[in-house]
Image (cartoon, rainbow over all chains, first blue to last red; front, side, top):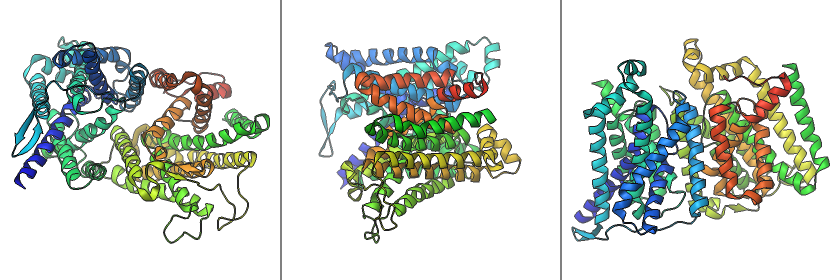
Length: 288
Length: 327
């Protein structure tokens, strides 16, 4: 019984951190640029396929871990220059256009790699013994990566000059520009950074999933729900939302079925949005 | 305005005469696309008029289709002996309408769910509905329900049946035309003006004393009922319903039809659905996966540079002799 509980909690923590890992880039782009990036799931997908390509060429997982985020970040940079920069201040249009981009990328992946799902290898196949139950060490690795990403983002946006400049641009673009901040450069950088995070998530998660062109959507929705429940617009929100959404989905899936768990989570998210429109974090911040 | 009505009249008249010049198989296919057109009109109402970007509109289409299938196949508990098409049509409108009312109550009232969040919630709902339908044995699971009977005119499911190509086409066109006329009348009324005002600036409308949430909720429910009607009609023509009708894929398609046709003009959205579905059947074999690639590219381009939609642009050009300006 005790082992079951520990394992359930470990599973939940694993899922929570995975969702936060995927949602982080989404949050950075939305929080900093007010762009709802529906193509985020497909950037995640590109990360996974980057791993596939690198491994296919004989490279190692660790090489892909470096190259994948860089490549996807470059794609993000291109998208910003070609499409996203026309969309600032047009939230609804940003959804529609990035969603078109997501279809475009997914379809391009289908044309290039075919619609069937592929398998990529994890860098190590170690099983740890946790209270008498085997637990794949690779999942602990994912959790560690997610924690590092969370801490890195907090550090980047709250402790560095670059992060300060990025936040200043959001708060007041004109004043920030008057202070000599290159706001266009920051836009490109922020979007590329968000895309790179998606790529990183894709590389890291791919060995646990079947890599197929539809995999982006499955993670996009919980990631969005995490941001909505937590409170859009700040890093703390995505962490809180990830815990609520990921935790409840994982635990309900254990006692009921995965479909019921999704139903419960969606219902919960709608309730939170109805009662606390600023999300959990925003709500308690206002009360203080 | 007068010339615009004239153009609309010509379009509908052309559609009514069209089946006389094409083969029977094509007429049947077009009759199916007419229900897609109706579906696109429902989205144009919610999105183009109320500014509600419903990313999961197929939820309502699918609910309508399943309601129709269950009713006419005699699978509704207690109503097995009464497989009436009329009951099916009524349920196909009522079930989505009630779901939308309920959703609207949660999503629009209070401080409410603005633009983007609403779209994502609808997307999540449609994806979830597809998954739940796949697992529901009563609804046929993954295989769906095969053998939905065609529309029967008798109250108890008997009587003459709508089966031949020409009558089916004209009945579908008639329904679409009736919905079109009704919606145009609604949109021209003061109530319709309030709906457009929601899109333009809902805060200001609220200051003027309008109950914005109620306007949104009722408009959304009307749009859902029309989508459900389209789904019901589709099911009875196609003879088959499956989880695909309720989920993400079809939601995506209707959004593209409406965006490329023209979200702010009912007729443009309607024609967009018709033209794109038609082109797809002609070109899909030729282009395969490139078709969707091209559509997605067109969608991005139209959002960036031609928000009003291509068909709407052409119609406006014909009616007014000029290019429509950007909003």
